[in-house]
Length: 248
Image (cartoon, rainbow, N blue to C red; front, side, top):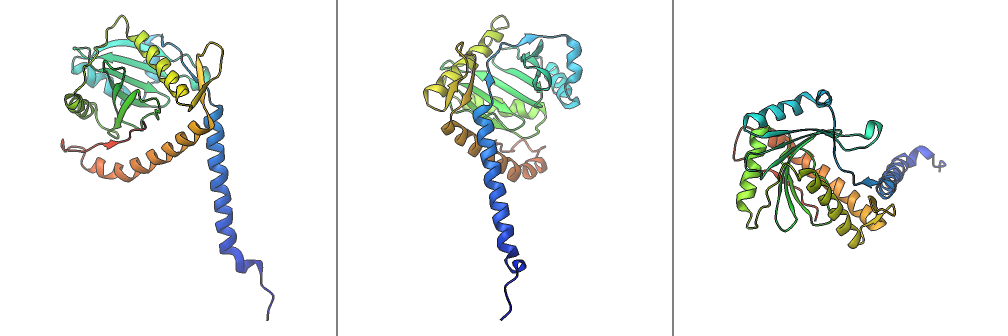
């Protein structure tokens, strides 16, 4: 009987290496989620020349919104340093019910409506932000043109039975900051987050929150990758059904 070669165990070794890599990858994501600081900073106005940093698609969305009588409110920075900084353009619908948020890094477009109970109804063209505070009801319509995203958001708004709180130009930046602060407060109260400074102006996930965050990321990737081809094929069909990704 010939001695067994290590080559005979190659399939088993391959599975073991892949498993170890997957576990290491998961642990890395958990550590990042627990270490990453989520700052709550007010948006600050920046020069209109920063709009050039937005993608061509983002500028097309802005132009399409203005053609639908959205009011351009300005270009803003989230105050982060270096490559982490996000440049954001804000536009407001005529009735004040829909705030359009167009962002660079990551590139995304959101239509936001504030409800009087404090929740935000959000329709996004890319993967939504994980939220475990119960403050956001967000669904994604992948890569949708602005007109279809707006139509989808309007349909969701019509189905809501709760009262809406219109945005006002003078208080919109304060409203955005207060929402972030309340979102953090509720996440901390649920034991899923912890404040990282005495001023309570930034926070991170706890171990339990990080586990939920990582699980939600994989869930979102799976759902969007599974549905995106079908959605793209039917993009011109107004009966298109969006992918709902709710995290609360």
